[in-house]
Length: 145
Length: 240
Image (cartoon, rainbow over all chains, first blue to last red; front, side, top):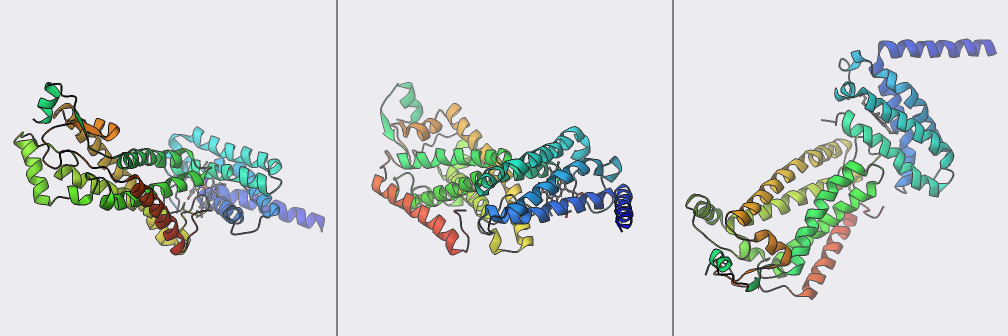
């Protein structure tokens, strides 16, 4: 049973690695969509539309921290166009800065996993976390339309 | 005696051109439009900053609309609104014929710039109420939740590009006012700061009559009620 699970997991990891290599656009968009989904609850909590739930906040932070490690590799030179992407060409002009923004997102998320312990610390720290998203989107993600 | 002669003869006699509430409005709007840009650029982690800046702009604009009816004599719309033909004749007179025509308040062409700036900034602020980031996660105007995702996208892209229109209008406005100061020797910028201009034979008014302080207070309070009450009435909550 354990072996089977392990084999299954290995297969999954291998498959997603291949997938990422073949279709980095789809792979990064899936991770980023995951960011969006994980952020819905905390964003609603910030607006007071949903009750504070530390578990959901921690899930979001974990999602960012994990994703931030994978994302830099998902913008290879051959993924500027071709496929449905909102990534702006500017990414490949200042790759170092772009990647540093993912690094900052990951670092802040890791720090917030310990810093956010209750509603007050959430309200104080989480907007800064969202500031990391905006800092990158402003320059590197195409607006809709 | 025209302004040039007044300055030459060293006449130090000053008359009121703009009352205090009008000047506070004017420079307040300048600061808030600048802060609108700053808070978007650097306030990613403080969405409330940009949103409150927008509410403050709306309050100023509504205040100015009211002040245009009950404010000082040079601030009233009826005192400076001019027909297009009057504005064109004025522009021809001063730019082409080089004739000196002096106004204590807004001249007929300048009036159009004032209305253009007020309308442009008002549209920008109203669009902001309905705007949000792509995923409605980071910043969302209080009325964005009352419209569909695709309408929010439309409003947001308008909100992002319309700022350039404001920049162009402001650039022309600043350039023309500098020209008035340096070429026509008409101290329009100083007048908007100190409130007064040299006494001279102006076409529109010889001296401004200021609006009543109590009226200014009433207009300010009314503007706050209109803006915040309006957002609530349209189904949004500006306070969170």
